[in-house]
Amino acid sequence: MSKQSPLLEQVLCWLGFHDFKVIERTFGFGAAGGVEKVECQRCGVVVTRGI
Ligand SMILES: [Zn+2]
Image 1 (cartoon, rainbow, N blue to C red):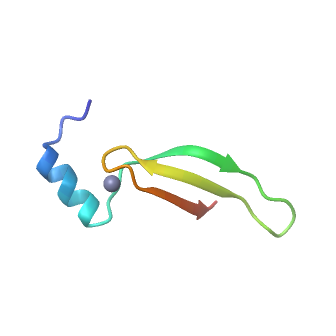
Image 2 (cartoon, rainbow, N blue to C red):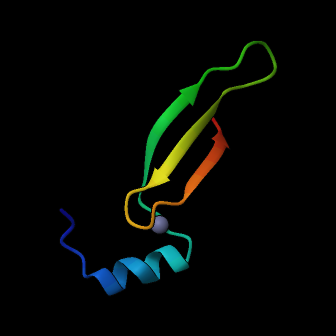
Image 3 (tube, protein in one colour):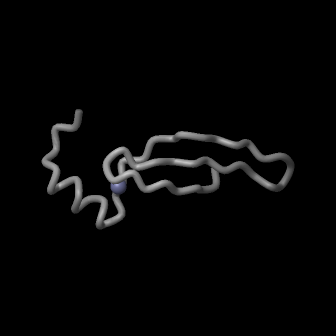
């Protein structure tokens, strides 16, 4: 588990510094590009972003 304090982790997430882990990756074709779905292991937010 993490060595950081829960409060510090919460603050980091508030500031947008999430601890993302890739949970799904989709490779695009041609000019479409791919996307990956990442989840913060601390607060659980899920974000889809281009790769
Ligand atoms: Zn987070």
